[in-house]
Structure formats: structure tokens, C-alpha cells
Image (cartoon, rainbow, N blue to C red; front, side, top):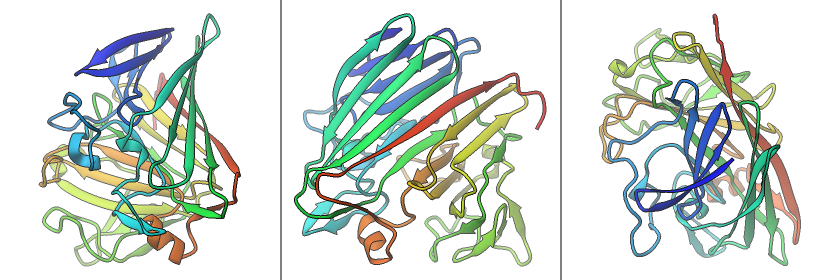
Length: 329
């Protein structure tokens, strides 16, 4: 079932069945704003302290300008702003800052399906997303397509900025992710609260800590009292999936994707230790499938950007599922 609403002045479309309530904000980057388990009311996505604020007269120019948490699509860049073919590409790309076109492709007894589309401004790409929630079950399916509108080969970096939190994430949660290797950046973003050693490459799941001889199991999720803030990149994936389980609630959340397209996972760990606004004090876990660990300009130089031919369309599917009746780890 499809329901229309306003959330802080933003148009919201709710895809709903007996198990899930999912909200998307088409005019705000097509953010997936809410992912709620209807029988329990548990929200799976993180919220920032300020939350969503009403829209301004024009779209934001920076990703953090009205960042409410939850789930954004990053394209054709992520992380640091860069230059591509002489054009400036913002931090975390273009499409999360822009309004998307939306249409209802189906809303009947079988499923609700939305089609969202956005043409980039600075780069010659069209991004299309179909969101489908069946009338039964606990899985949201995203069918996505990138089309090159260029007459020459182009390059892109792509990712999904999904951050768990809300009522779901708490100390004692466990991550299952079939990675092979952990890497961290050479410089720490917030040294005062970082616990992972910079510049490391280690086998999953045991990362090097900053203390001599310290090893940290990245599968074990601490509570906000940890007061830490770290980033790690995970790769050498056996398959594209991760699952976080909360045995206390008896619930889990799983994301599945094509690891041939997204071979990296950015593991963002703001466990209460982010001290820079607007993220001060947030508690969440970002597990973000990416094309490359690097922003677009660096990814091209390092051979990690995705090349797309003139007129080519690249398609992929992601599935986000709530797991019920989790009994044990």
C-alpha cells in the first residue's frame, strides 16, 4: 500500500505492508528516511540530533547541510569533493542534493512499486531506481540503472550511505559480513576518539587498535558509551551481503548486493564519539557498499572507478530485509 505524507515539509511516500513501513523523500535526494518494523515499531535507521529540517528555497549545496541520518544514494562520487573533467563534484556526489522525479508504477494487492529518476547536472549520467515492496514479506527491493548520456567513455563512483541506529542498534548487536581485508586511512578524522590504528591492512575481522598489541573485533558492536568514532574500508568480499542481529530484540537487518559492482564496504562507526557538529554524539553503524574506497578523482587514478561506455546502461539490484525471530547469534 502507498501512503502520501509530509515530514517536516518534505514530500514523503510510504510503502507499507503488514510487516514494514518505509518512507522515501523524492524531493530530498530520494532519501530512504524510515525503515520500520510495523509489528514492533522498531526503527532501524539512525537519526542525527537535529533531524530533518524543512526544505529551503533551493536545494542544499553540501551533504551535511540537512543530513538527517537514514539512507542516501551517493553518485557519481563519495567522500571528498573533487573535480571531474573540469567540473566540480560535491562531497558525497550530486544526486543526494537534488530533487528526483517520481512516479507510481504499481500499487495493488501484490506490491507497491515506485520509479524514481534523476539526471545529474555536473556529469552526463541518469540514475533510475525502482523501489518494490510486496504485499507480504519483509524485503525492500531496489532495482537500479545508471545510463551514460555522453558520447565518450565516462567514469563514476557509486555507493549507498545506509546507517543503522534508531531503536535497533545497541551494545550486543553482532555483525556478519564475509569480508577478507580491513583497511584504514593514513590519517585519523577525529584522533581524540578514534580507537583503530591508521594506515593498516589486516585480515577480517580483527583490526589493530591504537594501543600496542590491541586487537578489536569489528563484528562486536558496542553501545554509545564507547564514545569512539572510526572509519574502516572492507573488501575481498566472498559475496555482497551483511547482517546485523540484535538478539535482545529478536530482530536483524540484512543488505544484499552485487559485489562485482560494489566490492567495497565503508564501515562508519560513530559510536557516540563524533564531536563535530552536526554529527555531535550520534550513535550508529554505517555499512555502505561502494564501487571504490576513494573519491572519483582518486579512484580514476588508482584504476578503481567504474568505466561506462557511451549510451551504456549499468543495472543492479539491492535487497534490504528485516529478519524476525532471531533466537541466538
